[in-house]
Image 1 (tube, chains in turn red, blue):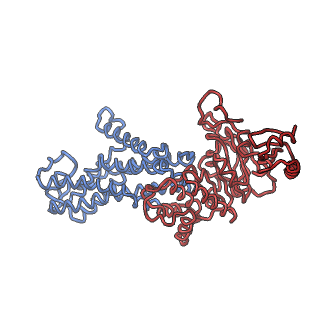
Image 2 (image 1 turned 180 degrees about the vertical axis):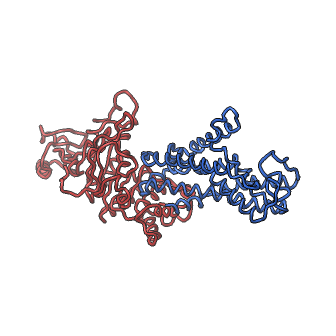
Image 3 (image 1 turned 90 degrees about the vertical axis):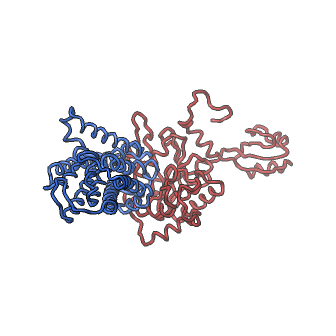
Length: 318
Length: 267
């Protein structure tokens, strides 16, 4: 787990939220280190969005405490949130105004936004998200991807110390997803902590340094990605001489799929030398790591959007 | 934040469309009156209409009387009902609150913007009423509804008072609609709720069986602005109307604030 002396951008203790009879968030202790890229994962309806809304002072907690950037929330909302950029459950804008007018209004609405620098900040933010040439067309004529980019621009407007993003690549094409990932990495290298909620495992795996997983309101995993993706103790070998390899590795074989074999071995280099010495041609060879998907599937149940009462879909693993 | 809300109000096409429609109705009425010269008999139809044929300078007051019972409160209920619920359903409310805009601050800004809209609407209706009235009917000798003559200054002053009174009368509707706007995420629902209250009130005002509650109904003293054109001015109902509206405004704004300040923004 996390070392306790690391300064935290987000820290919650026993954070809970009850909606009537339903405990949507149940005693969550988030610890998001300053400077991290934190991936917040969980099935639909697991309490991700409610947690995120509590961090931003939109929803009031039923129990527990929240500190964001070292200050209590929602008590210090005015000074905390001025340093936070957020994208919550999709972008929103006034449809009859153009993107720039929307950014101007939002910027002028709150604290920490000097008017003197507004135009330059808006230009910079629009350029960063690739909307600088969009002109004066109203937002209602934007595509989903453009709205998403505008939402990101709004989050970036005041060079926030912390970005809280809910599904930031929603509606973007592969090129756009790549651009957003590069942008977030660049901001993170510049010192911005990133808290990203998603159900796209690949997105989190490609971007994040730390991962938290919620399931039915409880935080079931919270660790560094590198630690979660530990070695399985197997080495995967691709070879056209699978039969010869099998004979050689008798007893150490874990699994085989055509000309790909899983071997129990601690040292891939020694295994490789052994195989080659025995005349087995090795096409590729790597130490196997647990995928994030394995980690998440092992600790979560299915999402609340799955209504069927029967068994799980055939072929899916658990 | 208040300036931001005013910019939103001004840049919204709907604001101007509503005001345009509000001024269109008295203008249409004036055109019919001027072409046919058939005025309603005194005591029938909207206030002042029987007198405007003789004197167009009374038309601002007549125009207010035309839009006051239905058109103006509907417009105010729609704008005020949209104030918070509209932001919620557009999704912009969550971005305003985590921008951060304090919830009380947001509500005050919304209130100011609604008040500005009401005043703007009433002033434009009265102003256009004056232009239309003097152009179509000419300005003859001025007289009060009691029959005595009024100087131009007196008439102007009384028209300004009437504009203020009608504007203030609308704030009760606005407060109710704003409260409902913090309760529901549907702007239409909030506007309809406020209108339901008004229609109920207007029905009960006319119902003798409901005489015991009549003095407390929000629409009871709306037409008291007519008393401002009597000679001498009959202040009693105007004063009561003012006090009653103030109570409605205070109660429903307090409720709106209490509800919104502690509400989970889940939209």
